[in-house]
Image (cartoon, rainbow, N blue to C red; front, side):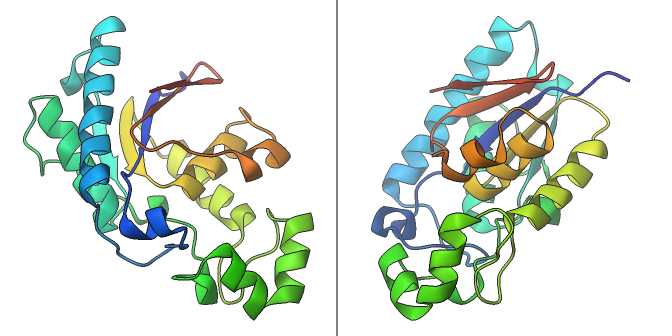
Amino acid sequence: MMQPTIYYIRHGQTEWNAAGRFQGSQDIPLNDLGREQAAHAGGILKDLLARNGHVPQDFGFVSSPLGRARSTMEFVRSQLGLPPEAYALDDRLREIGFGHWEGFTLQQQQEAHPEVFAARLIDKWELPPPNGESYASVQLRMRDWYEGLTGDTVAVAHGGTARALMVALGVQSIAAASELPIEQGAVYLFRDGAMAKYS
């Protein structure tokens, strides 16, 4: 069975991104820069599809249900000349849940739960934040999402789910993925067992 090609885009910036606050399941909208990044990613995707001999109609389009991802998808589809709202949603693409840490910065998290924070520095992949999810559990749902794909796909989701997908597909180690910045306004191409970033 052939592996599907995935063009993966992280949502554009929000005010919480700009302030260094963890968002997780919170539905924070794009800011002005985020909207520019979303449109920019759409332009990159348009060029990549043409360069690779594809047309947008060859692909399924799916987004995380969170508003920042949906808005980004609609900017992307507009850049491709497609109806903005004609795409699927999949809850497995939602961001990793940061539990009690959502809305707080790293420094505030450290002050609120110093023992958990210190333990996560050693094993960020397996240990969840208080009342949150582990990256290991997100990796399982991203693997499940990938194995259910029936064709080449454009996905818009989040930084945490991008890291989990990289590990699930074996293109990054856990240690590398845990600390890898996931760029906004970029396109990550997963194809033939490898990953490339275009920005």
